[in-house]
Image (cartoon, rainbow, N blue to C red; front, top):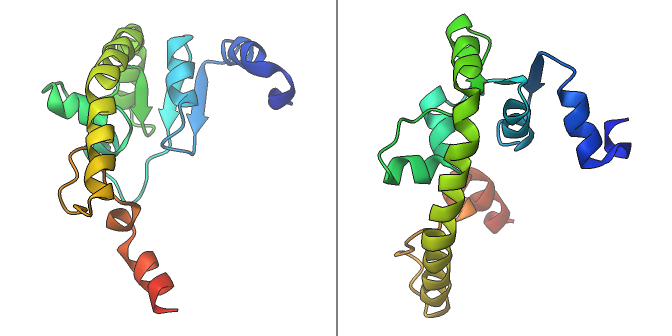
Length: 148
């Protein structure tokens, strides 16, 4: 079982395979697989185009704010031959992109979060700078819970 091998064991195991397929579009394992040289494929969501998926993952806001292409290096969104080629051809670009993201996140999003917490505490819930409430993504479920 992979979970019994620990992180390094899982990484070593990933390197044995040509492809890594994730059914979880938000798993960091897709990124890790690409960084160790495995062609990483995310099973596409029926509700999201590739661009919508990229915008919804944790590096999406960074890509948008920095006006970078809305693509994830080293990761294919589905099985199309051009996606697999993209994943193979751009694996080497993923780690540097994630390092840039980490710097941006530390210098930008922490401050946004702190200001949003302050706004929330003061009751200013409509003017959040960096946060989005879960009910914005799933309004039907929140309305159903509130109606009970």
